[in-house]
Image 1 (tube, helix red, strand yellow):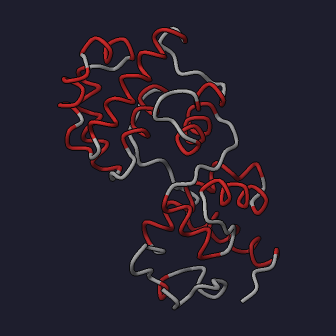
Image 2: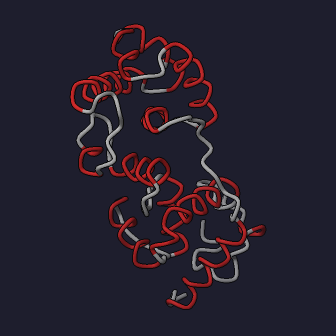
Length: 211
């Protein structure tokens, strides 16, 4: 099935209606807590991240406090979050950079965010969008899978899919669409067994019944 612009527009319209109340699942109180939560979310569920960050931020809720606790203690605090040694190393280095270069604040500049240890385009886009209100589409595993299946945007890399989604979706909807696609991937368009029979996009989807 060829996916035309008209079909893509209709997909976006349906997603916007079905998931109009979609919000971030990660719990945070400020840009710093969001940044750390997103770093921790790699290969880890948001539910588990929320448990981990609640414990961590009760002990250390600023970059300075994280630096002061030291790497071994940080590793223990996030041990149940998967890949904890590498994440702890990146979080500690990021907190050191925030303390030394930004007065303990998360920079709003996108390029500055990308220079922080452990921060790639997905993390920078999430922080830019949610914390600082900028239009951005963060491509995680759910967004990547759903965009390719729907052919809203196709690509072999997250960057290719991000660029394709930017063309397919009006800029003013980029940040919201990120959440629509995530929740659609979690609830319906699952990795192993997509629930095509329950999908509001089934009549438009070129991948229906092929997984």
